[in-house]
Structures are given as structure tokens and as C-alpha cells.
Length: 172
Image (cartoon, rainbow, N blue to C red; front, side):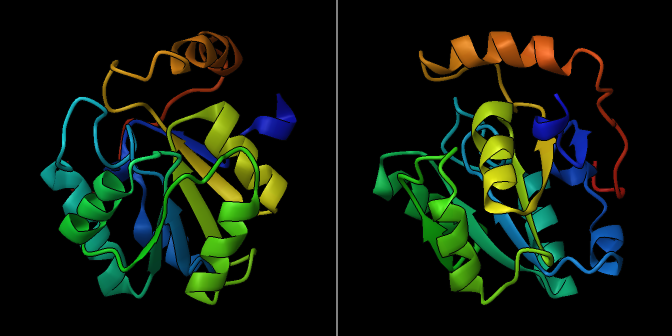
């Protein structure tokens, strides 16, 4: 699993230490929408996700929402709610092209960028193909698209030896 191994595996976005990321040279965040920022069974992001993004922007991170969701209106509504100016929908991850487009939108290099997502076989795989680091978060709900359930079965097996970090930077 070394090729698919994320940089870290955390319980939710608010467990990601933004100060540590900034100190390590990261300046651009490519963030997935469904089950990463917005639970699949909800239309709005929880306050913890909004607070985490607000803090990221205050620290100087540039943010792009990169979603496989086919519904432009849903993705753009979430971006407006979360104050994200750069949006890519129908990303077709694990293909890396949308991530490269996100880097272009943010005027970011691969080395200063990080993808945050909830799926090993789409988000993390795409980040590896694009040449950028990734942090995997646990899905924010057990509700998924019908075809995602098969991926989740294999994902659980692949992640069984990778401990999930439950701590964070105090936003919980």
C-alpha cells in the first residue's frame, strides 16, 4: 500500500494542524467536498469545517474545492457557503487533471500543495498521480453513493494497519 499511503490519516479536517502544514511549506489546499467538508447526507458543512477553512485562509492558505460531484449547483453552493473562490466539479479523480487545474487556479506548485479528501482510491490516488501530498480524512458519514460502497470495502482492508489520528489543532 505504500504507493497509496497518504501523508496522514485523520478523523476530520479540523484534526489537521494548519500551523504545522504552514511551517512545512504548504500554501495551497485542494479540498474534496462530499464526505470531507460536507457530509454526504447534508447540504451544509458543519461549523468545524467552516472554522477550519476560515483559519486556513487567515494563515495565508489558498484553497480550491475539487469535487467528483456532477452537480455544479451543489458544489458551487458549498463553495459560496464556505467562502471558497476556486471550484472544480466533475473532477474525475483519480485522474490527476483536475488537481493540476486546481494548482493552476491557485498559482501553486506541487511541492507547496496538499490534497485533503476522504477516499483512498480517488482522492489519495489522484494526489499521487498528480505528484502532490495528501491527507486522508475519515468519511464524515456512512452515507455514500451506491458505487462508493465497493471502494469502501477495499479501503477498509487497505487502511486496517494505518492508525487514524484523532487529535487536532483545538477546533473540536
